[in-house]
Length: 193
Image (cartoon, rainbow, N blue to C red; front, side, top):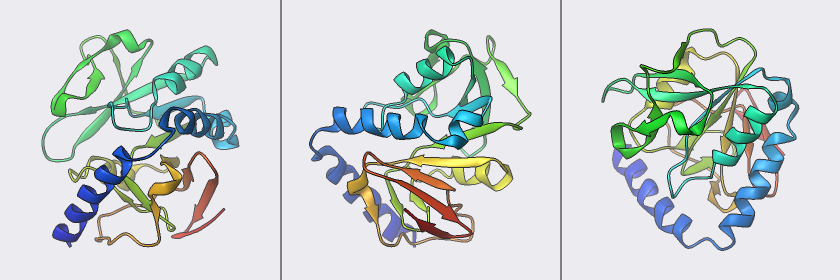
């Protein structure tokens, strides 16, 4: 299973690099996300801070600030998939952390332990039609989603949606997938959209 996932991860990275019009696709993905009722109704947005190769989230974060939403970003506590969220007030509060990813400065940010009225924006290399994903292989989001009861939303280029992703018992699917072309609602392991 891990070998198969690793191969899919490798293929996804190559395919994503070859995609055309990524800037326009990023804008449309952001627009589709911002128009979701689940996003609009959330008081707090849990969101990853994008790397160079991921779906861009900086603009989404800035728009959330302008809409007076609280924004919390992930902090990887260790190398064992344990992740917390911290509230930030600006992207300038971030620093380079584990895996060379921008993370909150936990000495200056507020730990978030109440996930009421939140929506969780989840990264992924690929998603399938059931909302399962190929991430980066460390299990941080799967572990977090195990205990998260709010709405989880995966951001993905439409070209990176495949029919079926191999899954283990610990893999968790998202509730909604947002691409540049569509919004896919997933319910109890099945999606439509």
